[in-house]
Length: 167
Length: 167
Image (tube, rainbow over all chains, first blue to last red; front, side, top):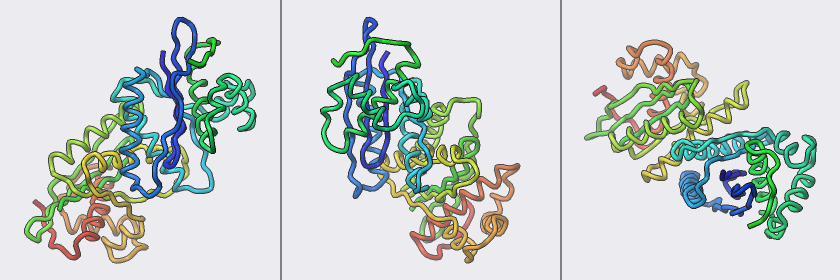
């Protein structure tokens, strides 16, 4: 079982890939895709598609996990988040993957055991489970840990209590 | 110049294709894509992609026109409209097309001359310009006329005052 967790954004998209092998879960890939805000949305849609198409092929992903976004202050930003999610749904269809959405509460609860956990508590748990992710520099660390959290949630939903290790 | 206008929806998607040839605009294709609400979103994302990929190839489309949606009562429906729009952005990138979004006011104003026109006034103008569209049966007639309106808007933005004819 290989789960790809994605936290999509038109500037920074965090992603993480967990693989289960002989009962052990390995974090086999994680990081972020940065796209230029000066590029047209269609160009970024194309880059996003190619990036995740390659990740899916490379790691033989069979599940995609996404967090259901909440409506923030900017409605157009919210709509545009849908653009990238739509591309992941398309990739799921083209590659015969399962795709799951989780409410923020579900993600928090599956990582920390508490649905009302703060962003920092979730990130703290992720960094404890996967110390390598904590070393990921800069602002993008949060995008990576968000993707890790949803990936873990997808992973746990499919398989209870695996042992985690960094690969 | 060939313009594809789309009014996306996970149940019914209206579309229209206008082509300019020797100074005359022809309505070369119009109709709707119906998808089953029992199919998974990813399956419908795949159907949507294939449908419009084929239309773009068939008609040598070089422009895509979309209306910016407004936030209705249902936030999740609004987000999901973004999914299909994202797929159109991806197709625009993959096929090197221009893609334009128009505010509802712009669409109404370019079709009827008045940004505050009602849905019925816009549809009435479309049916007068393209009597064939009026013959399109059932509820889907509105989806087709909405797509026609945004297609016309895209067409007019690119080229002022062409002569319209049904092909």
